[in-house]
Amino acid sequence: MHSKDFGIIALEVHFPRFYIAQTDLEVADECIGKYTKGLEQEALGLCSVEEDISSICLTVVSNLVSRLNLDLRDVGFLEVGTETLIDKSKSTKTVLMQLFENCGNLDVEGVDVKNACFGGTAAVFHALNWLESSAWDGRLALVVAADIAVYGTKATRPTGGAGAVAVLLGPNAPLVIDPGLRVHHMEHRYDFYKPDLGSEYPRVDGKLSLRSYQDALLACYTKYRSKVISRGLAPTVSVISQSHPAQTSDGLGHHIDFVCFHSPFTRLVRKAFGWLALDDVRRATCVSNGEGCNSVGRSDTSRLDAAVVDSVSRLLQPDSPALDIREMDSICMKATADLFADRVEPGLVFARQVGNMYTASLYTCLASLLLSAPESRLRGRRVLLYSYGSGLASAMFSLRIHQTRSLSGLCYSTDSETSKDGRTVNPIFKRLLTQRTRLDMATFEKILADRNTLHNTAPFKPTHRPEGLFPGSYFLDDVDEQHRRFVSSHPRPS
Image (cartoon, rainbow, N blue to C red):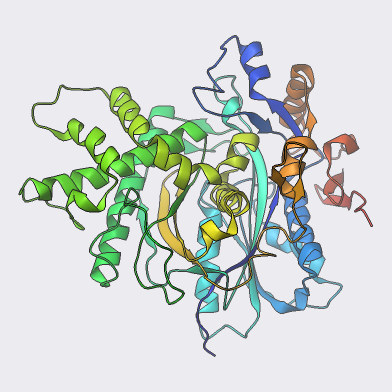
């Protein structure tokens, strides 16, 4: 059985109702500006004890099914990417099979995938492999990427978060994954890992983690560029190329219009875009100077944004003063500020407001882009995506937003609303910005303490806190003496 244009049909985003403002954390930690300016984060989503990885996965899938009126008999593949483990044997995917029982569909391929923040992308690739294989029977594939990110120290807890994304994939998709262009970079590193199976908290080497993210990003970018060129799709690839008309529905041309990154915190994404810009200018400048660069995808600077080239190329001159990494980052971020606002910022709404969602992070960035940019700005455009998981596993791939296929149900099918100031607000953004429950510091710390104390405890019955649950959410109702976990659901509005 053969079809074309496999890709993403729909995305569903779920985040906790509880949150704390980063300004409140700054006051408590006596470091005003460190989290809001230094990390560029506004809020941090937090799950109470009654929300675990199973409950948030059940919630996001049930929300997708409800919104699309999806018949689960039409799903033949289901895989979960997560590093939030509550069982060393039983997969979260098997918990989700409860949703399939009523329709009698128990013939569903896939289990769980684990490698830090990379599991969601691995599951997406597995889904695409299934769709493109002889095993495909015409049904759809469903991937869930979900995690609860909590940390044990004041220095690291502002980079936490939680969330889940359900990704529905199939043929003739509005978001077409570019075939044959995904690349990987894998290494053995101890930048972030969780050796204590009795705790949710990771061990983090902060400097190594940031360097590993950067190393993997640039390695993936080089490999992606090389693959595009070797296939004759374009003479080079650049994230700072000049603006151009939308690409045709046949996919001719290979311009990068938007970039979505794995986002531990927004400031890192801003730096990452600057690193790619510097790489673009370095490759272009060496050709313009007539130098023989040992690189792929070289082009002259005429294809690139002139203002960025002018600012960044000064860093590459032989007689330029020696700068430390922070100074170089600052120059690159300033030079790319306008392009960042246009090509990256639309994808950071959830990341700023909820925090690091680990496996779900990249796909909430994609959803944010689709919800933030007007449809006319999206049609025919290409999105470059970078996925990173510590340890390390990383990948880069791209997708094209189809010129004509409907986007109405892609992220949210309900009509947008108009706010008092005249702006259009999508219902999911309205929920994010106006319908969450803000925590004070005492409650925030109590919830964190409870999660730590009760982790892997049995038996226990969590305190039910409906103010921390959105309508329709699943929650952990009871854990028995055999560590079996039972869930219930908050009423969904009729």
